[in-house]
Length: 109
DNA sequence: AAGTTGACCCCAC
DNA sequence: GGTGGGGCCAACT
Image (cartoon, rainbow, N blue to C red; front, top):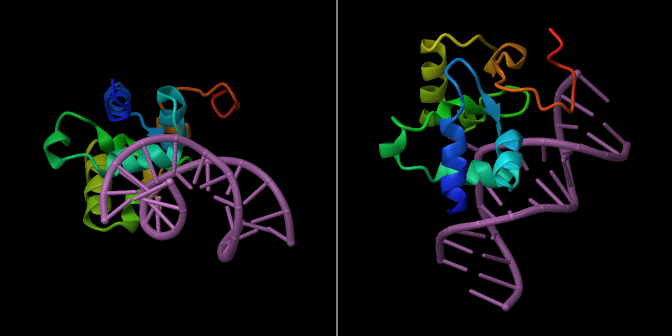
């Protein structure tokens, strides 16, 4: 199992209506957030349909791909189409983050 | 093999 | 509370 495979497998487990952040994916697959970004940046467009890459955002909910160009526009559009609550280019993490990290208490309701 | 480059994150000012 | 720099891992040259 390669690192890329592990990242992709984890991203596939993000449920619709939820998001994960880079560092969270990283801790699950055993690497760092920067590497997760690098892996996703190299993902072929043919995988776009089977891997919900748009559900990975920065820790504060920011859609970091917006700094890159068309991919960012695409990501934001997909999320909006799927009904995510996005304010000022930030996904509402309190609402859409997939699982508590148990390190914080942002999820007490 | 050493240097550069990221779809990041944390710390200090 | 915004901004700047360092650390981190893997790939590319």
